[in-house]
Length: 344
Image 1 (cartoon, rainbow, N blue to C red):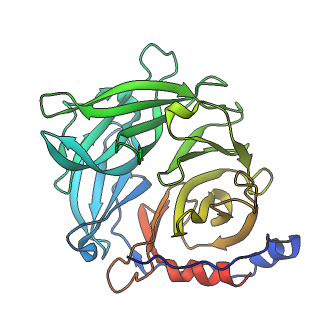
Image 2 (image 1 turned 180 degrees about the vertical axis):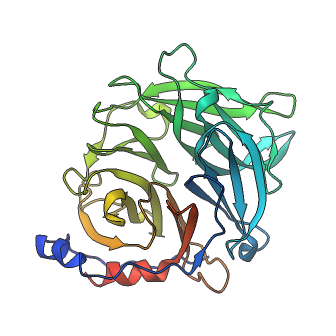
């Protein structure tokens, strides 16, 4: 399927930033039915048989928490309860389980210090009741999670962050594999990632194609590392410093073509998203300059996901899903954002 093509833009100026305050927030095409307590993070599952029947999986962050599954009309089609404060969720495709390629949704369960893994689309657990994370650490409570599929061998990894932790090795990366009994086991393959100590790290996103991990050190900036553990633990970049009202939060990656596109980062307290070029600057792939600020109707968002694939008639160039603190998730047509980016 063909992804939309983005024009080349110049970085925003101070005037552009001030002018953004006068731009009306984007209105969502769909607002989901509310979750019970505290909507926090969404992930998009693309139905390989028919993208018009794709699903959104979202967390309800509470001691009596749950994963909610929504259709493209925003209706709740399934609730997986009994989760102790699920924070973030991500999705990967084709993990070999019982010899069959299996799509999975993985969420952090903060109050039980573990991750939970569910098969898609039926949301049946395939983790033996949960997989402990940060074993042996004093500070364990997991928050952020993102899944990386290595292109060379299709190995799938979970990158997990925590509520608080040390100034280095803040994130742990686990390889997910069939344990030989039809369930998924996780093996630690590395510990990496700097932390400023200012607030916390929650949002993590992975660019599978280019092989990068991005995560929000919430009042310091967006940090960037290689996703393949074999490429080492050097920090490649930190960007976005001073470009957010308070917290830089939810991260999602939109592809406009091979190696090109946008990194979208929530400016949580400004109810907007900062847009950076995915490929970086010319001859400087680790230099990410602010292109545009896009206000949205979602309130205080700290979680998002995006796809460039056509999703039904309402989202022909892709779907952008954003958490809102009114217990809902908002669906935006990518063309709404494309118009804002192209204006500059």
